[in-house]
Length: 91
Image (tube, rainbow, N blue to C red; front, side, top):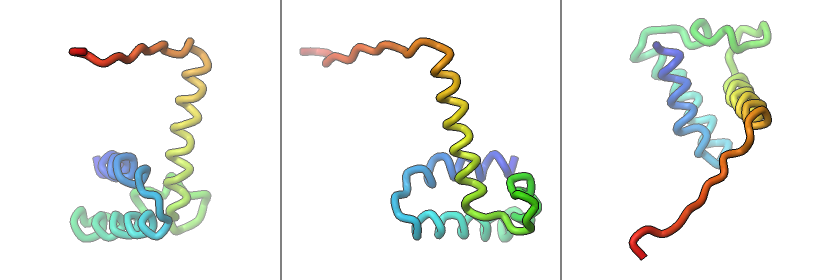
């Protein structure tokens, strides 16, 4: 459940940040929250994201989100694009 919560926080907030210093702040804040509030070791919970290194880095989470985009692109290439029509209602 903790992995899901962290993933959702990153999906909702991290994706919208435009400054690298803000992204780093969010990453470090999440690491601190996992340790202080959930009493879990961040490195242990997310060791599956590392390339054999002991520390989980912000780039490990970026690659996870980029992978999600690749899956979406693949899915969209299989299906025909959804044609949408938008109009103003109540004109």
